[in-house]
Amino acid sequence: MSEPKIAAIICTHNRDYYLGAAIDSLLAQTCDDFEVLVVDNASSDRTRTVVEERLSDPRLQYIYEDAIGLSVARNRGANESRAPILAYLDDDAVASPHWLNVLLAAYRDNDKLAVAGGKVTLIWPEGIEPPNWISEGLAGNLGLYDLGNTVTYIRQPGLTPRGLNYSLRRTFLEQIGGFDPNLGRKGKNLLSNEEVLMTELAIAKGWQVAYLPDALVAHNVAPERIDPKWFLQRSWWQGISECYREEAAGRTGIAQLGRGGERIARGLYKSLKYFSDPAERFDNLVYAYGQLGYLSAAIKGMLSLSKPSL
Image 1 (cartoon, rainbow, N blue to C red):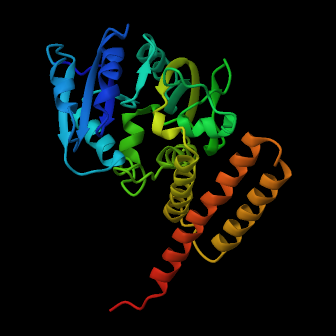
Image 2 (image 1 turned 90 degrees about the vertical axis):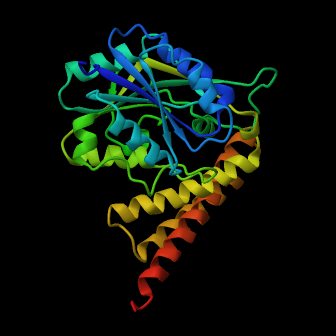
C-alpha cells in the first residue's frame, strides 16, 4: 500500500462528547489521499466506541496509548502513520472541508516549511454568550487564533499556530526527536508550550513556520472553561510550561527570579490601571497569577540543582 500524502491525527482523552464530530469533519475532507488516526490516550469513557462506529471507513485507524500525555500521544500518532505531513486536530474541534488540502498545498509549494497552522474560531455552548470579562487575549486560551486573512510567516514564537490546528513536516519532527514529553497536557495537568518550543527549534534550524488563514478550524468552548478559576489554573500551568521551555533551551538560573518578579509587578500594575475595564483587568490579573507558577517551577528547579548528589 502506498503512503498517504498527509495524516490527520486526533489525540484524545475522555472527550467522547465532542470526538464524533471531530472525526466526521476529517472523513468529510475534500483531500483525495489521506489517513485519519485517533490516538486514544487511556480514555475511560465511550471513546473507543465512538471510533469503532466509524471504522467501516478504511481511512480511519484506532490506536490505544496507555501512557498519559499529549506529547506522548502525538509522538505515537506520528510513529503509527506513514505520511510525510502530519496534521493534528483537537478532539473537540471541527475542521473545515478543505483543511487538509490547504495544509498539503503549503508544504508542497515550500520545501522549507516545517510547521503550519490556520485560523481558529470559537463555538460557544448553546445559550451562552461570551462573558464581558474575557478579553481577546484570554479568548486565545480557549483556542481563538486569527492573524488576519493573508499567509504569514511566524518569526515570533509567541504567535505560533495553535496546537488544536497544527501540522508538521515529518522530516523536521524526526530531526528534533519528536514532541518533548515534558511539555503538553497530561490528564488534568495543563502543561503547554510544546508548539512554542517547536517554532523556536524550527527557526533556529533554518526552517519556516506559517499561518494559513484558509486552514480553518472551529473549536468548541467547554462550559466548564467559562469560569475565572479555569483561566487562573491554566495561567499557572502556562507559567510552569514557560519555565520548562527555558530549561530545555538552557536559560535557567537566578535571572528567572528577576524575570518572574518583573512580570508579576507589570501584571498587577496593569490590572489596577485598567480596573474599570473587566476584560483588561482580569487579563492582567491572570497574567500575574501565571508568573507565580513560573516562579514556583524556577525555584524548584534551582533547589534540585543545589542538592548534593549521593
